[in-house]
View 1: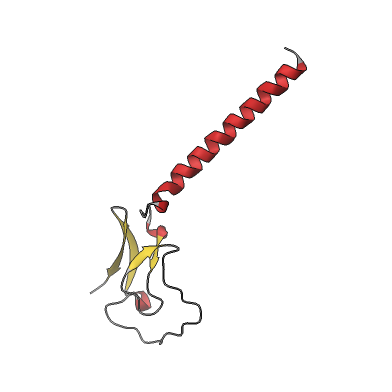
View 2 (view 1 turned 135 degrees about the vertical axis):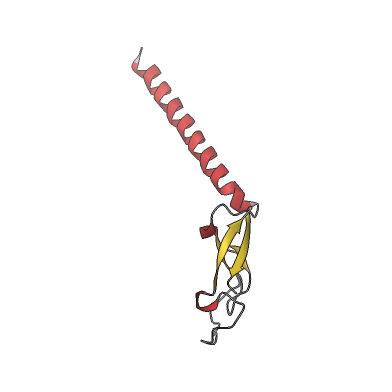
Length: 97
């Protein structure tokens, strides 16, 4: 095999690996792009203060410049009264009684 042919095969293999990597990366992020969570870590509280609901990361309310009270509001995620969970592809707030 000539040196030029070998270079072409190496370049082709490299391009194939790039395409495979991009395909895998696209499919891993596809669920989040269409609004589905995969794990609890994908979900965050929606409201900046005294949150009662959860959404995907990046869809939460802007909290910059917002000042919340330090009061643990009942029926919210305040003070570890609950957590955000991914349930059947949807983010949900799980609030203790």
